[in-house]
Amino acid sequence: MSTVEDLKQLEKEVKKTKRLANEQASVLHDLIEDKLPEAYLELMPIAQATYEACEAWAAANKKLQAAQAALA
Image (tube, rainbow, N blue to C red; front, side):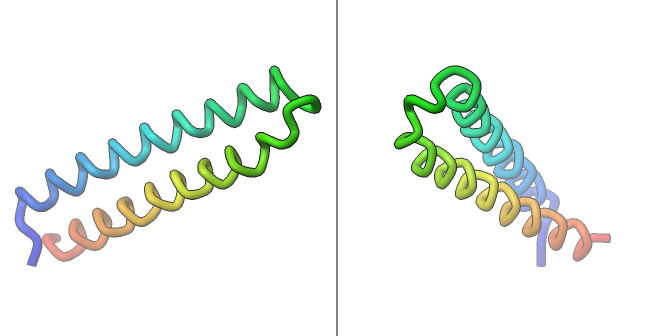
């Protein structure tokens, strides 16, 4: 069972993972805007890292939503 304290921790995790996903998306954006096509070899690793950061946010957000529903 989730507590209010658990919810606060999950909210903090969602904010953190969202910030990290946004930072990684910014790195990808900068690569696309400023370095392609010359730096095309950097594209896949950066895209993968962006995908993984977004996946981490989605997982954290899903946990938060489930905890919120359990307390409702």
